Length: 157
Ligand SMILES: [Zn+2]
Image (cartoon, rainbow, N blue to C red; front, side, top):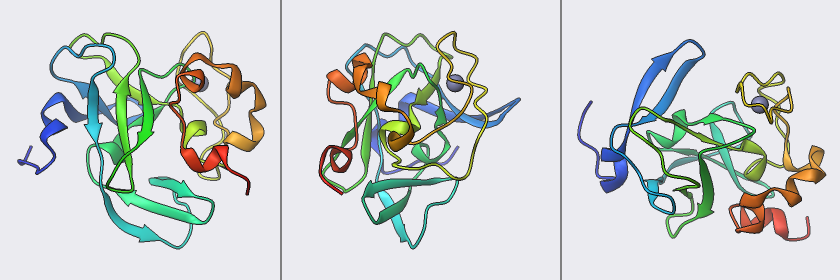
């Protein structure tokens, strides 16, 4: 893997698993630690399966490894908007080496079009990958209460 300007890149490597690619912890990470700081690579006209939504009408492609972080209904990291106009991924629990770094896409995307079925395998799995608008119960989840959600989703559309 090539060196990256992202200083946090050293905590995660992108590997292929049965579902495709994913990001995995290569060091043990403490709860609350910034696992990845992502930066926008470019702005996109519409959402894609690899884009991240940062405002009501704004989608970006982020750098690696953030772009490869898979969805889970019971994520290991929460998202927090950062000074680059993208997201930091913060460990929601201690992550031993080898843990897959997963985020809840519904905390970033208002709608999700690229996926339908969820195969995260968590006991809390909703069986579908859905956006913020389709998942009102999300507001009760602990990571939302801790503020790990895209700020624009908390504003009026
Ligand atoms: Zn799931």
